Length: 365
Image (cartoon, rainbow, N blue to C red; front, side, top):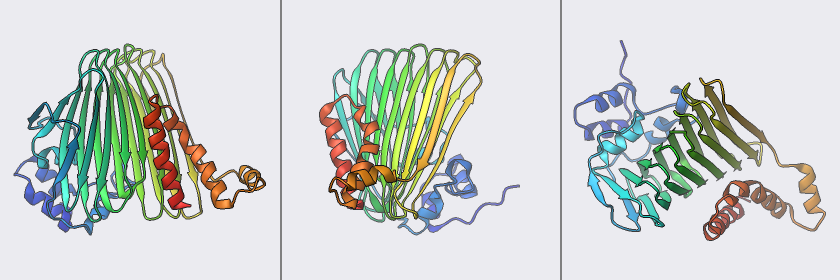
């Protein structure tokens, strides 16, 4: 017998907005994810939301064009935040990408808790770019679910930017179906919030499909950024490459959870995941959990993870050339974090993200 948890005011307000059914019963029985839930043990969403206004808000989606359709989303994944986004966000906005298109999606919440759902489809052979930006005002909560369907021979470039929001909570849950012979490249630049979680779950079809996931994060005082990604290889001959780098300063907290799951049918999978974290002072924290779960016996899979402080010799070298210590530390940190962003092929976008990173570095130096 499970004893229902005592709901916070925020959780109770959410529950009142839901019709009777499984989702409401799950929320009333378990509450929102917290540190005793394995996948959320470093990102206590329940505590982060407990003192935020429970008023119902509106998630505003400012897109570069109107959606192709709007429809109820009946097949949200198991994650409770994605299900809440689908249930409380109204009709999902559906975009069918055109060949050569760059679609921009700016999601924001000005007050209260806003939920929304988006479906993006890249049809057979389509090459397209999607740029997403997330922001929330102080005291606001943004909860967004996005589903990508990438068809055979399609080529999707996804670029994500998350603004720093010291008093807001941002949760974006993404699922992606990557078909055989499709390609997807995802690049993320994040700065954290009171709690920000960017979660990506990819079903990788193999058979020539390729996936690149790159990310950089810089988290300052009072901020928390969680990047969680699961890649599930379901067919043979798929390729995955992941590189994430982060720096944390002034007591901020970064979380990286990455998992590559290879099913028995996914023979000849070639997958590598690498995470590097830089702690800029003794008060900061990075929690990392890279995982491989392999059920096939003819694969090449590897992961790496390293956390450390700034190289004292490199810092000394730059000081000897007349740079102040803050300037030298900023340059070294920028050089460290730039690598995932420099993999973007679009020079203008790459320079824009590097510029935002530099501005953020100046703010935390």
